[in-house]
Image 1 (cartoon, rainbow, N blue to C red):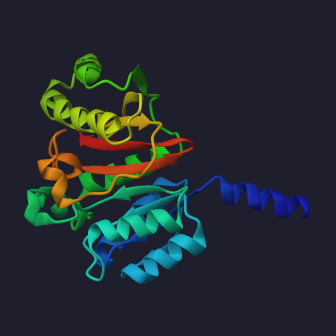
Image 2: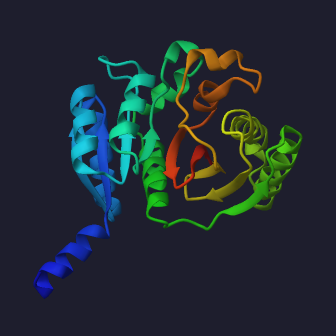
Length: 256
């Protein structure tokens, strides 16, 4: 490869490669324009239907998939699982709840009104995290023990109070409780809780070392560890999954 070719390849790789999956053209247009203005992103593909979305996830190897789970052909859970199967190293940013009839109507409204400044700003925040352009996270390692979930809540609360964000404490308690309990009950793993902030959001993340990938499901509402990912999706502005060697990171963003 020539020197100029190597330079072009390096420049191309400096961008976060994004696949947009949304059946609302105005939403895709708003996100594409916001990412172009922000810089550092390359929208490598777009899809308005499930089958094309899965094929593009497989063929384009994106870094991040921005995924609307409200597409009509497949159920939300099935679409998420297929995208994860065909793009196993991609982060997945979910911008709608799997079913707005299950108490997540506010979250769904976010997905279909991305032209609002706050929503576009937040999505740029989420994708900038993929590029590492945010304030470094504060983290706490905890054992595989449900009795330690209270320490996770206290840790997140203390960070929010340091950042003068007391209005987020109650919702953050619920979110970190669900994510931490899932790491213990489903991944059967010790885990690490982290909290970080960007311009428009605060992210709570739990990294575990267990098998499997989470996906929203109606039956999780009645699970013994809480109301599951449906509750998280209803309370958070967005949530997602990032595969890691020997485990995964599940995160949720709260609007500042």
